[in-house]
Image (cartoon, rainbow, N blue to C red; front, side, top):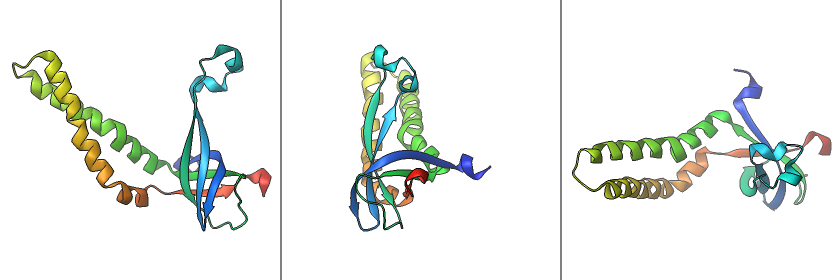
Length: 144
């Protein structure tokens, strides 16, 4: 796999700086947000996220454009933990509860309730996960 395929990059603006840690604001856009008719359409969905990143570049200042990047493999692990594994927990619970004589609405509700302990456990390990899912920042090429 080439280096370009193993790294996820996104541009953003530095909102805060504390030592070598940056708080970078990125704008996430829906697929249709890149369309030439997005201003007339109104369906374009955009949201801002703040990502913590590390840099060794002391010249980066608040308000500057930067590129944040991380390993694609870690992104896939994050998607697995946040979406794929809970989906399988939900489906497995629903399949198990199908064998009971509980009302269908109760089976669905209990299946959803199983996600509460899962996400609680995940949030308990938030600091440990933060150490594994690290983003880095560098100046955009045009700004160096």
